[in-house]
Image (cartoon, rainbow, N blue to C red; front, top):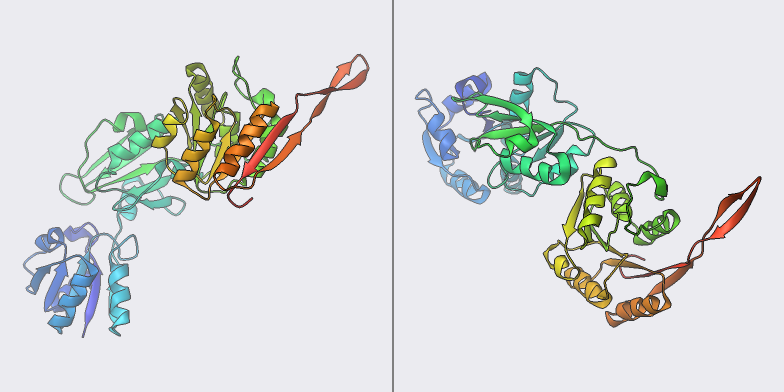
Length: 399
């Protein structure tokens, strides 16, 4: 059996290579998506069968027996269905030839006169995609789009994260009739409509320098809202054991100092700052902008009600509970029974409530007291001035 997997680029004549044309002319049967089959000219007389699912393609190829070609859009090595069919052919001991083609990333780069070697390459076509995490990599991010995540929807997600000003470019119907290149800010392009055959290029988001946890208190935008202090913040992050990816909650976020530092540690994940006071939410957004914490989302509302709408967390910091501590712990563990919970407390009563809340859900609480004293100038001398003791109570997760 002779099977050739062929990439047609955009499907237009100018993106089909000479090698691919020769293989199509030699094939007795051509299989692929209806759009691609319909676009092939009369110079390819082979019988055509519309099919896209790997299992269906394999069944048809086994029944056919003769020299067959399977066509794909774009390039066979760039988010292509060719990968799954190749695996199934190899399981059956069938050798297949692969003929690559021009991908949409190559076509857009050529239209813009730019190299694409340093772009972050992503697919939002039939798979979950986080455009905010992608643009935070420090590189321009290229997205294949499709389905619910078209260019406008991706731009809307960027705008929601505070990146409405980010320059983006949409390549629509590349190398086909109706080709269009549209440039603008994400907040503008989120209101436009684009053809299904579109790709998006978003420029790299501004990013703050990376540094160890425990940023100086003075660098944050502050108001009358209480803020978790520097050394307590560093200890809380250490207790959470923040990973580079995942979902984290900061409940009772206040100014957002913990949220911002969480976002900096979890650059490829998402942090939700849960806060019920509108003035505090404004401070959180201001600090998000200042520290380029674009993966930080503000969930304005009370806990535990607001938590029901959030995705399952890997870790939860509870800096304020409004008297609903046990209910907050319950919601977090209902969403992820392995979530790591860290609770800060300044009163003995809250310490007892925190330990009981963790025990009630089968967790062994670990409690530590932080008694920090900092220097204060007194003329030519320096005195140690004590801050109020803070307790951190933790449980669950990796410990």
